[in-house]
Image (cartoon, rainbow, N blue to C red):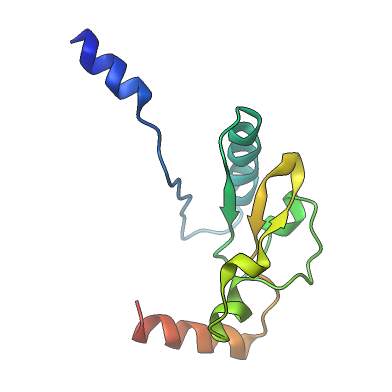
Length: 114
């Protein structure tokens, strides 16, 4: 039993997803706290904002006009080119600014290419 406990303690998540259908529940705040905490412990962190509200940029001290996942995905471009350094040295990819038409195009694309 002790060996199993030690093995379980050494297992770390590779991906942490914070998901809620409700807005205003603290996803962005929690993502920032988890990311900065893990970064301070020496863990590599990339925080991705997949929400069209694009709130994560604010928590990491980034500009809201930076290119993000929304437009980059619509243009079939690589996400690595929109990786930015934010609060506590965390790497961040924001959703970026999109208009309603771009959001609808992205929704259609995601339905066709899940």
